[in-house]
Amino acid sequence: MFQKYRNFIRGISVNRIGQAGVIFTTTAFAGFLFFEFLRLIGVLDNAYIGLITYMLFPAMFLMGLALMPLAWYRYSKQQKKSTRELLNERFDDGDIREGFFGSRVFLIILILTMVNVLFIAGAGFRTMKFMDEPKFCGTACHSVMGPEWTAYQQSPHSRVKCVECHVGQGVDAVVSAKLNGLRQMALAMLSDYERPIPTPVHQLRPSRETCEQCHWPKKFYGSRLITRIHYKMDRGSTPRYTTLQLKIDTGRSAGNGGIHWHVATENEVRYASVGDKREEIIWVDWRQPDGTYHRFENTRLRDKTTEADYTHVRNMDCVDCHNRVTHVYEDAESAVDDRIQRGLVDRSLPFVKREMLAAITANYSSDEAGLQGIRNHFFGFYQALDAVQGARLTDRIENAVTVAQDIYKRNIHHHMRIDWNTYPNHLGHQHDGGCFRCHNPNIRDKQGKMIRHECTLCHSILAYDEANRFQYLFQPDKKNPNYKMHLFLRDEFLHSKVQADKN
Ligand code: HEC
Ligand code: HEC
Ligand code: HEC
Ligand code: HEC
Ligand code: HEC
Image 1 (cartoon, rainbow, N blue to C red):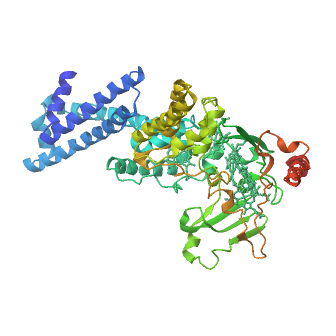
Image 2 (cartoon, rainbow, N blue to C red):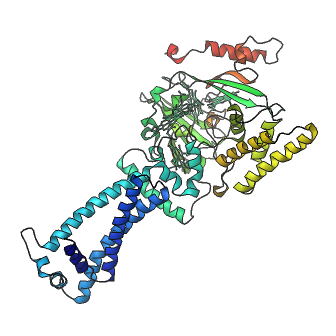
Image 3 (spheres, protein in one colour):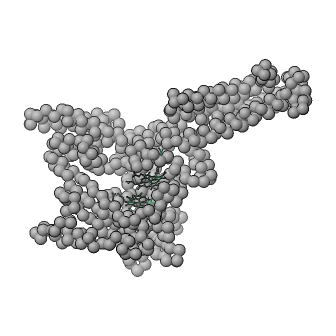
C-alpha cells in the first residue's frame, strides 16, 4: 500500500511546483494533527500556537492542494501532451489500468479527496471554534486587544464569549464578522489601526440579537438599591454614603415607566446625533404600535443641523446606556474608593485616599514610568510625614503602592493611548454622554415640553454624601439648612409607589 502511495506521489510531483504542493499539504496535515494532539492532552494552551494550528496550517494545506493541478497543467503545456499521454508516461501500467471501480490512480485520488474534504471540514470547524474563544479574541493580537481583555476579565461578563456580544446570531452575522476579523488581523499585523480603538463601535449587532439572548426587557421590574461609598480627602479618608433607589422598571406606557422604558418591547426610541458620535443629540423620538408618536428636538441645534445629520439615525438599545458593561474602565476616584471599600488599602495611613488619587492621576510618559512614579510619589510623601511623626510606615506604604499600581495597570495603557476617561461610561450622569444627553432642558417638543429630568425621575435619593447610609429616612432636623429637601426626598421614597401598584 505504502509503495503504491509512493508511486502515486512520485507520479504527480511533475515539477518544482508539484513537489512544493506535496510538501505543503503533507507538512500542514501532519503539523495540524501533532499540535491538535498536544492541545488535546493539555500540553499547549496558547493563542499564538492556535494561530499556527488553526490558521497557518489550513491555509498551507489549501495552498498545497491548489499547487498540484497547477503543476500538472503547466507540465502538460510544456510537454505538449494530453493528460492521457502523461498518465501513461508517469505511472505504471498497473496503476492506470481500468478496473471495475476505475484505475488505481483514480481510486487513490478519490480516497485522498475524501480525506481532504474531511480534514478541511474538521480543521475548518476547529478554526471557527478557536476564533470564537475569548482567549483568541483577547490575546492573539495582544497589544491591540490587551486593554479590552484586561477589563473584560474583571467584568460581570467574564464568562460570556466575546462573540456573543460582538457577532450575534445568524449566518450573515457570522460571515461578515469573520471577514471583518480577517481584515482587522491584517491591519493589526501591519500596525495600521487607530489608538485608542474608536468608539462607538458601529458594527455591533442590535442588542435584540446579543444582550437579549440572556437578558430581556420583561425581566426589569421594580427597583434596585445601591450604595456608593466615597471617601473624603481628609486625614482619615472618612467614608461618605450615597444611596439611591434606582427605578429600573420597564413599565407599561410613557409617564408610567422607569429606566428600562426605552427598551420595552412596544417602544421604539430613535435619535440622531452630531457626527454619529452619539454624544450631542439632534433630535429624539419614540413611537408605539398604536401610532402614539412623540418627537423632541435640541433647541440649541435647531438651525444648525443639515440634512446629512438625518442619515445617522439610530434605534436606541441597551448599549446606549450600558456601553461599558464589559470593558469597564474605572474612573480614577471610583477605583480608589472601591479598593478602600474592599479592604485592600489601610485607611489608617494618613491621607491615603488623597495621595493614592494624586499618584495614579499624575501625568506619566509610559506604563513603566507610571508604575515607578506611583512608587516615588508614595515614598516621597510619607517619608516627609515620617520625619514629622517619627513612625515607620514602610509596610503599609508598600501595600498601598501595590494597590495603586494595580489600578494603574488595569486602566491605563500607553501603547493604545488609553488614559483616564478615554472611554467614559454612559450609564449615569457623572460624565458627558450619560442620561443628560437627552434628559436636559434643551431637548423639547413643539409645544416646548421637555423630556423630564427631575432628580427623582430615575432614582429616589436616600443619602447624598452623608455619614449615614439612609440619612434621609430619619426625621430631619429643622435647623438643618437642607431640611426641606430631606423631607421631600423622604416622602418621595416612602410614597412613591412600586410599579405593580400603579398598573
Ligand atoms: C457583554 C457583551 C460584550 C462582551 C462579552 C465583549 N464585548 Fe467588546 N464591547 C461590547 C460593547 C457593548 C462595546 C461597545 C462600546 C461602545 O460602542 O462604546 C464593546 C467594544 C469593544 C471594543 C472597542 C473598544 C472599547 O473598549 O470600547 C473592543 C476592541 C472589544 N469590544 C473587544 C472585545 C473582546 C476582545 C472581547 C472578549 C475578550 C469582548 N469585546 C467581549 C460588549 C461586549
Ligand atoms: C451569554 C449571556 C449574556 C449575554 C449575551 C449578555 N449578558 Fe449581561 N450578564 C450575563 C451574566 C451571566 C451576568 C452576571 C450576573 C451576575 O453577576 O449576577 C450579566 C450581568 C449583566 C449586567 C449587570 C451587572 C451588574 O452590575 O449587576 C448588566 C447591566 C448586563 N449584564 C447587561 C448586558 C448587556 C448590555 C449585554 C449586551 C451588550 C449583555 N449583558 C449581554 C449574561 C449575558
Ligand atoms: C437618546 C435619548 C435618551 C437617553 C440617552 C436617555 N433617555 Fe430616558 N427618555 C428618553 C425619552 C425620549 C423619554 C420619553 C420622554 C417623554 O415622552 O416624556 C425618556 C424617558 C425616560 C424615563 C421615564 C419613562 C416614562 O415612563 O416616562 C426614565 C425613568 C428615563 N428616561 C431614564 C433614563 C436614564 C436613567 C437614562 C441614562 C442611563 C436615560 N433615560 C437616557 C430619551 C433618552
Ligand atoms: C436608558 C438607559 C438604559 C437602557 C437603554 C438599558 N438599561 Fe439596563 N440599566 C440601566 C440602569 C441605569 C441600570 C441600573 C444600574 C445600576 O444598578 O447601577 C440598569 C440595570 C440593568 C441590569 C441589572 C438589573 C438588576 O436587576 O439589577 C441589567 C441586567 C440590565 N440593565 C440590562 C439591560 C439590557 C439587556 C438592556 C437592553 C435590552 C438594557 N439594560 C437597557 C440603564 C439602561
Ligand atoms: C434621567 C435619569 C436621571 C436623572 C434625571 C437624575 N439621575 Fe442621578 N443617576 C442616574 C443614574 C442612572 C445614575 C447612575 C447609577 C450607577 O452609577 O449605577 C445616577 C447616579 C447619581 C448619583 C450617584 C453618583 C455616584 O456614583 O456617587 C447621584 C448623587 C445622583 N445621581 C444625583 C442626582 C441628582 C441630584 C439629580 C437631579 C439634579 C439626578 N441625579 C438626576 C439617573 C438620573
